[in-house]
Image (tube, rainbow, N blue to C red; front, top):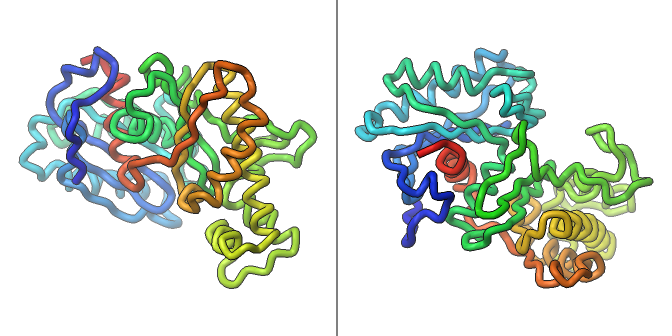
Length: 328
């Protein structure tokens, strides 16, 4: 359980929110749920594996299992809202999701299905859908490393690269919920094709998958699994190819962070996700290269810091998104 010691710093519309939020966090490996109090404390946490090889309704059955478990909590009758954080792409204007790592869901009407599911358990409450990058941003601004910053970029650097924005203390998801998707900013206009159809995107250089593949292409021989974690371990031992792989990723991230800060005047970039767990192996090159990109006076003090909430960010973020985006 996370029990914050200071109150929720959020838009005025949310400050008076009462009653717990049903938080649902959906990813390619697990579906988690919790009841999150207005101060961020989590209760009734539960999780189940995301079904492999199931059809759309089979995956939804796992969501139903999580909601059913939450509904057994004595706090259930007082729930006030629901926040759903999902792997993307998402389209919050339609309430649909098409997660890359959940093949059975393509244009799946997740928000409507969850709303129906809640009602079936006696909770007819408003529901918000957010992409996982936006949810992480909401979490870090509420209780994490971006707390107290009116303008922030938060990022997830993992098998992909995503993110979200807080501007003027307001979560800024954009019309379809994808604003702040920094992974598909091009930082190498003549770079290699990206899976999105663009060229030289941050994700194609700085994701865990890209880091490992580049290192392998340059002749790195893994001691174990050929993953970004393996590259990070090799870099920590001084392997020159591994160090170069992280330097390359750090430069791409620095360029994108500086571009975003220059565009909307964010003063902090918070980075979480599996690749960020490598610590200074990633953060040192980002900070070193940032000085070459964040050159204007209003971005020269830009901070780059690790995310603070770790594995709790998904559920805390789903609740925070609901608190920030729904009227009180």
